[in-house]
Image (cartoon, rainbow, N blue to C red; front, side, top):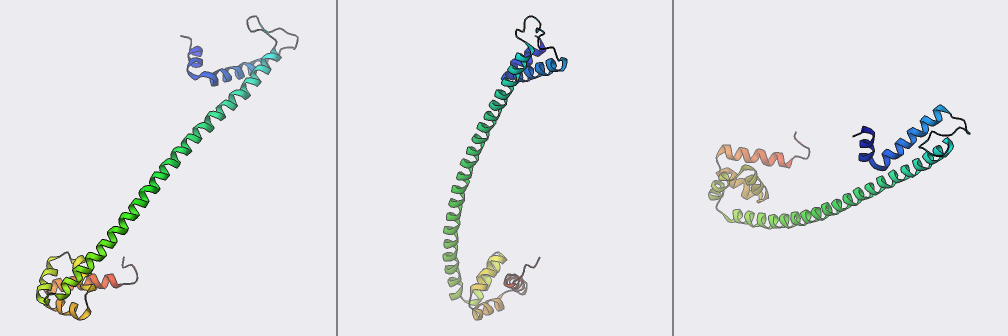
Length: 176
């Protein structure tokens, strides 16, 4: 198959417009006389061909811009739809986080009240078995007098670790 025909067949209107512009450029470069006839098979004069090529070039450009505008509108609509989905997911997540925080606050208060009524030696033993960050959070919520008695009952290393965590949590600036 002729490569030019293959190119024209695969690129549609844009290729025809480009070929027409190339033909017009070729014809204008050779500058035939206005009275000179165009070779047989083309029909019309060179000025008619130039007018045709100029007219079709504007239409091709307008069509290309129209297609690009439609594609951009489609992409914009797709982005808007995705943003709406993300906003909905964000609202769901914020609602879930609020419910979680409320639950944790209630659970935390009940856990603190349990440790408040426990005997200090039993509370110290249970807190030493917990994750140090969690244990420090519970001790920080206890009454200072009760927390002091519980820390006194704890192993020295465990009490030191909890005290370190509580001191770091109480800092106003970032320690890192």
